[in-house]
Image 1 (cartoon, each protein chain N blue to C red):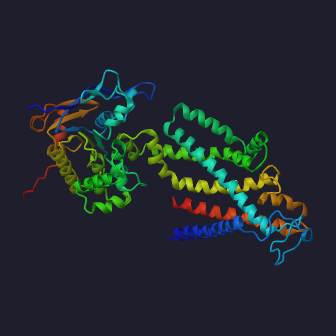
Image 2 (cartoon, chains in turn orange, red):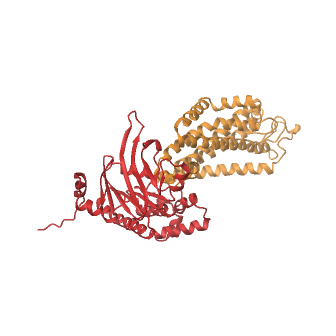
Image 3 (cartoon, rainbow over the protein chains, first blue to last red):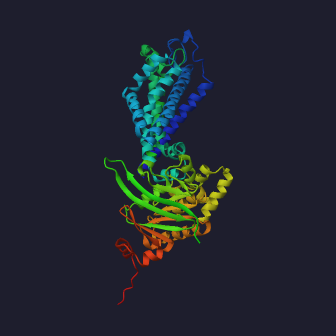
Amino acid sequence: MHDKKRKNYNLMVGGIITGLMLFFILVGIFYTPYDPNGMDATAKFAGISFKHPMGCDNFGRDVLSRVMKGAGTTLGVAAGTVFIGTFFGVIVGAVTGYFGGILDEILMRVNDAIFAFPSILLALVFISLLGSGTYQVVIALGIAFIPSFARIVRSEFIKYKNMDYIKNARLQGAWHLRIMFVHILPNTFTVLMSAIMIGFNNAVLAEAGMSFLGIGVQPPQASLGRMLSEAQSYLFRAPAYAIFPGVVIILMVLGFSLLGDALKREE
Amino acid sequence: MEKELLLQVKDLNIEFHDHLIPETVVYDFDLELREGEIVGLVGESGSGKSMSALAIAGLLSRRDMKKRGQILFEGRDLLSCERDVLRKIQGNEIGIIFQEPMTSLNPVRRIGWQVEEALRIHTDFSKEERYQRAIEMLQSVELEDAERIYRQYPHELSGGMRQRVMIAAAMICNPKILIADEPTTALDVTIQAQIVELLKKMNREKKTSILFISHDLSLVRQLCQRVMVMQGGYVVETGSVQEIFDVPKMEYTKKLIAAIPKVVRKSN
């Protein structure tokens, strides 16, 4: 009974934070108080004021406007990354888990090899191959994320493929693809959903990290990590510039991890 | 009058190659199933009766069966035919019900969806036609309030209801053969009797032949016309219900019959 209450609490708080963030980003797409890339030399390093609620950066750009746009960029990169990771991860995991045998061995060893590298390092390798930029970051991170999804889906498929109702589906004459994606896949949704939420978090952090290193989103486009990286030189002159993007990253990650946690406990 | 021969199994041998030494679980299994006939397959746990049934249904991999065995369904050998041919027969011509109704329905799909599955695979019925058919089937397995059950999930139903749903799902394409692998073992006695009645009704109304696998001889006696007794992978005795129960030849069969609990009234 107590456990149930705590679960709902997580779901509620996570949902509210995520909802507010999404609202914030959505508004940012259509409206920002200032042009996020517009410079105003007179407002250079302006502090927190009614005119600039989050202050201004070293070029006199409004931080609130940039955070609104930048959160959108970060979220978009994270969503793209998770989509690529989930899509291919599900296919690889389903095929290896369902069929097993030699194909499983080969694909899973490749998977292990990719898994052995830290995903940021792996993404760095891809970036050096593909060049830097927003789409390249999405692809690089996406590929780096495939193995973890593949593993989760594979173990779920192994668990379900010998269930009586799956045997029953086979005996009704269903072909393999139908069994894999119509009969087994829906059973894995609870596990997959929490994996997606956790993956989302990692992707937000990875994007911020890569932009921070200067290889992700290219200036002048705003992204949260990029802003943090620019702000570090002016940490004492304009602390607000570093604090607000950081707080937004924290809120985004917190919201998603609470949601993921709540969904996992639902299982 | 001799009825048409539907299924003929000749010299079926099942052996597993998972270990260094192949392990044989069924030896020289022979079976004939005619139209409208109910054949019982009895034996203790591990005697190979379920394995034989799974082999007939086509669930075992073919390399587990020796080359000389044959499973002829209306003259076609299910062991050597194309996969697509086998898949068209599965669910459409041969239906199967499992022992454990609690685990044989997919927990994340609605009952209606699962009952319709065979139609979705084997026919090009429209959504409405499938719905009509599924509701008819749910009614014919004597489930009350079929429309409501159609929309429910398996966890909302009791074991007996789920087994009825399984029968509905297995029978929806009007298969010629229904394989019932211990369909009553997991149910309590009153429900057992109802399920047996239901199988009888299916046999009577739709002329479905039934291969009834059980270790419960009293149920077999109620339901079947012919009985095969299995022990240790061999079919040890075959005959009509009267022959087997009145004049069992094998010692093992006698023991099985002796094991049927009898109602004895205590005299004081």
